[in-house]
Image (cartoon, rainbow, N blue to C red):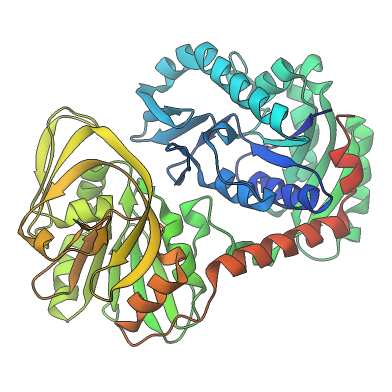
Length: 481
């Protein structure tokens, strides 16, 4: 009989995604057919699925932990912020609309139908579905029409385990306070709690652990020490990709745009011993010793181009190139490198045209059709075969496309400047491919020594062992029995 358990958090970034990935790997090791599920996710870090849709990157990692290919049913509602008040709404892998917060609330009854459809389909195919909540059930002002936490749990009668984050402090209040503000009907679905990200000797929290049990009446499933190898897994939040403090190595600087998208492109580079990666924040100048500057993807290309200019990075890029540096633009970053970006229909914001950085002789026009596909490509300069994916709107063309970055199905993709020091491509995920990463780094005299996919697999196994050693996993996985 198929069953499910839901991991909810006392807040955002308490470690729910990592815990679900670890529990999925444990369940798989025990011979269960297991799948991940997140009813609603808000992220600009998306993965392209084999069925031609997109889901949150965290669910793609969880699918890997289960030994499954990512599928749109694993994250049926994905919100991709395009501004401070509006998000693109992706339903079962396809763009539905762009909505502001109040407009989105009106969509929720319709979206719940898709959520339940996807969830029930997964349950029919697997022994166990491990569900991840979003944000916190303590946000009771959002409870009406909720599809991400207790609204989903109640609709499906899925038991809940609540996760608190001791690293940010106040974990007793986080968990006890959550019980205090949610309704008795919602609280009745909570089977227990766990405390995540403990640094030091977990026995020091024994008294606090008992206090939570006494105040809530909920069962504790364990105190989970800090998992330092989490940095080896794809980042869920752009802030999770940290600057690697190395004294030497090829210095790659990535501009942390305000609507940065698919930023896990940087993860494999961050792991390379011969690379010093700097994630540049607002107000910081591009360092004079940078070898390569990467302009990453963006969910709002024209908006982030204005943001880039507001930081003075356009001036810094010009100086960087005068010093002999290199620039790579990926997806939205590629579009910014051109001479103009036109959005005549206002797909990503107000209709209009903005001048680009002018570092590539190409022009981009935003179009309503979105390209979502996994691709096999050949890197033109090195003739290296690699795998990646496309996830973008807009079409780019111009004189520099005569020097393509890659070939996809025999067709040119991307562009390279006449002097060879500025490149642009729509292909995400290229650095995950060890062959490409090695060939690309070799251009700068740096060797690639990491097997990225193997590192992720090894880390997932280590995460599973880490959880097994400190949690009552059997009891947690069986709360729905």
